[in-house]
Length: 202
Image (tube, rainbow, N blue to C red):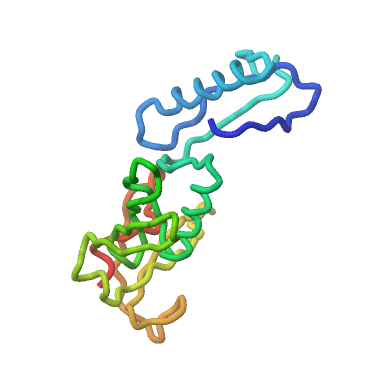
């Protein structure tokens, strides 16, 4: 757990943490996260953890809908440089490697409409240099962008979906009806994301 804050009412002394609900395919992740939350309360707060929610002043419940890995930035300069890279490259970036003094970064850039690419950042000058792309022949090609849309299913649940129009199309709808290829997969524990899918960019 990252960061620290105390926004609970002053009268709370005991907290119950029932086992989180796991909606992913990761085995026993709910046990690990529930134990981690309990450990944080015990080591970093004065609250007493009780097993019975009925006997507690407050209850913390959790539901694990998905898992993702990402960097947590504590250094303001690092966060500033990462934000600059995301603006300049218009992509999700991550530090792949860096020099011993931290002055040079090799960063990976991910975009839905481009193959994964690597860049070199000189943090002292602020200059970013393109190194290479995972698919060099596609790096400068005009590829179709990805659009996000939320569809309401018959049972009322919201389905986060993505669709791709021809590269020449503008806006969220084509100028005329077009054939559609529908890729149904996963669910309810996993869904697609705004990333480069090699089979849907032509």
